[in-house]
Image 1: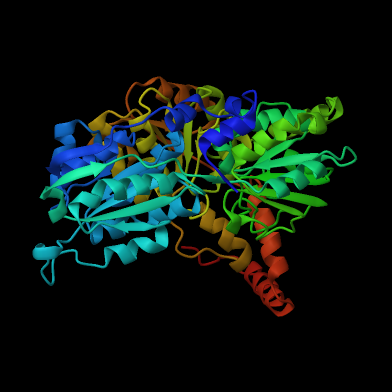
Image 2: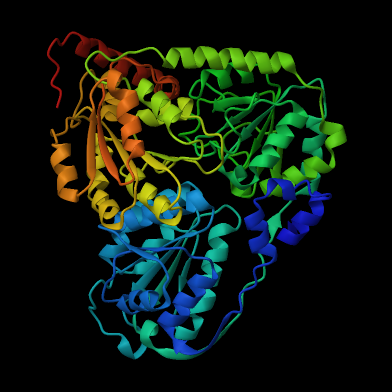
Length: 614
């Protein structure tokens, strides 16, 4: 059965689901009715008008011969745009803007190298379920077609593996409809990127347009499976825990209400951080196995029924699938292909998370349990122990990354937007950088695209100019997108860039050393970050010891301009729960012969007092 947004609000009855929906989203779905694209105009004008009607705040990219007409028209119609230094960043900025706002982010690139440059971050948006619309100005078609045009790769084929769908426009009058369909598809079902490929000649050709808004997309709801789920959760002999993912991001108040009804502890996936306030008495952190927070692992040991909503059980969030099976699992997801793929599942509910929550609220009499103070005390005790562990200093000659993250969280605003890159610190961040509001903590989860956080943070800052935005990136990730700091300087985007510098790919070293007894291709060059900051025209600071943490971080946050902060870290032997769990699981998956080979090699390498590290 499919429901429309209006049906969802009816299903909620007495406003119970409406209370869990952002008012702006409900208003946008039920009240905003654009007039449509009407009249005689160029394809570029129709494209810009459609983007405006779809609520686009900013288009990220680099102009080129195939879409200059579009960029000039954006300027004429005052549609926001942002020039980037590399198309890799254009896709990450659109991704970051989408994660921060919940609306599709938009980028525009030239065909060929412009498109291929942004594929990695389109892949990130696809695997991380982020709505993005990628507009590609293609080579000429019709009478404008010539063999061997510049950038004449098969751009539609290039987009297909990293998008939900590609709309290839063949006539100018089809542009508005294709763009509307792209926006709707990007946001409906499991969100993701969608491509729109437009031959350049269609942008300056004129046509008569008559394009009206699309009807709202439906959402799935398997009522029979939902009824079985409620029946199982209503059994008071079974203790229920909730595992919430990004699919719940727009229903955070509903997740809180259901948790309190069920007296259920709530863990989230990494990308789901923020869907449940981590300062709530029932919050246990992320994950619920050995890869996540210790509080979540200890609490969920006593759970009989896990209710997983809007989450995929992906490799990263499960620590290489180390998450344990529970006695009973109810899995709710808007994408049927995500259900029962990894975990042993008792009930699979193909449903939008919001509709399922509304259905549960209608049956609150069956599900509501008495307050469980013992559970609340248990969680609080383990959280205190966990934070006490993170207050321990492991560093000897620099900054302890755990203490840095604790201090950064303490000094940033509660609604600060934190973007964390692919470093070992992403797992410590997930444990200690508490998210108390939805859409405030972000990292590239399932494609693990290094260098993502700097441009993603800039994209969010561009569309949410009043918010505090920080990035935490490693020196290796910094090398991949550092030039985008110049964009922050040019545009006055006050992002605070914290670079954890140990002159190595420390994440790779943590993976290589236990397996091979040495490191290979992990040592980085020493950089003069101060000179780089001066060249880009941004403020610069260094934090070289734990004693400088509070003052150094506060000074950067107080600055009204972008700031580059080098944090000289000493990772030392601070434990990484995720890596330990992933290693254990990896070894368990090896055949006996493979395991013997790994152990023998590690034993031989241990005798080498001067390992060949580079």
